Length: 269
Length: 78
Image 1 (cartoon, each protein chain N blue to C red):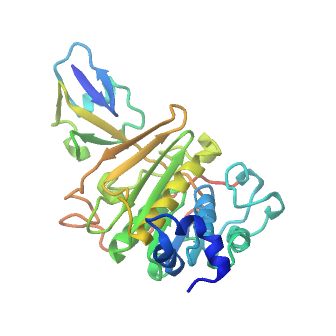
Image 2 (spheres, helix red, strand yellow):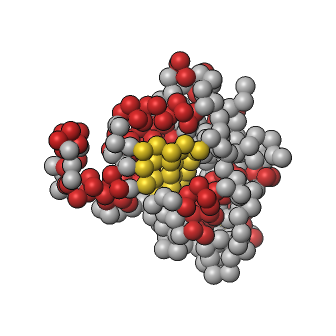
Image 3 (cartoon, rainbow over the protein chains, first blue to last red):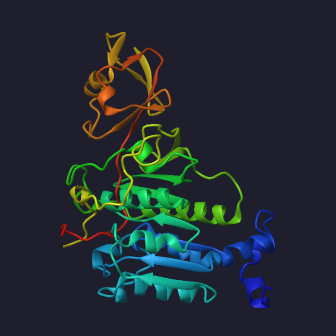
């Protein structure tokens, strides 16, 4: 089933008893959708490709900007001006020709999100704005699609894995988006470049564990990371019966664009 | 009153109990209008902040919105 080259490429996985040949086959058969090819999406896409996740989708409508390169390690200086999904695809295919990369050069919206995530086993939120974060949560909950939430700001980050119908979702913690401009964005407040590397790598780890069916996922626990204190904390958060999307009497029953929450790590210069 | 706030010991001087709205002021919690408050493992509804009393020994978590990553949504709503 494996070529000799694959046995060599994945040898450090295959010798792990939690992975083995069977697990590596699961990764090669796995499909993961990465939404956002920025700070979080960069390490996520690179590590998933290196790991041999067979099909990786990547969505982003933006082009590479010079100010991205301080943290978005999948994009290089000659890529400035290039569509991010194309820049990302080139690096992923160069790392691992086993991987099929599907690019979506579009902004996610209520109109396209269900289609974008439909074909994948697991989705990853690498977006920077609350409209997208709530939309991804709602779409994944409604479709029963497991996904990883990630967020970063300045020196702190958070991540949570959501198993719809079984574990705490983003709206269980945050029932509705903050108003536009209420929360500072990365372009206003800054972000230390290594931070998305830490959070994104954890999100990629969750996707790999999910595909392998090994370990304990970061469900019902919000992991918070503080780079200045070099502190990781997990806070237990139970499902919220009054959650607007996965609670007993949901009020969010269709996908909507939360336009009032359009507040982003706006990378416009 | 001694509390555990985001995993660390914390003291509210001269009071044996406060409601959650008062606690947000006492502790000068940033983004108080939007922060999610979890008391002893339960996420509180914002409408319940005034009526929910925090007492000696309680564990409180303040959970903040974090964006980050990269834009995947149109800038400037249509």
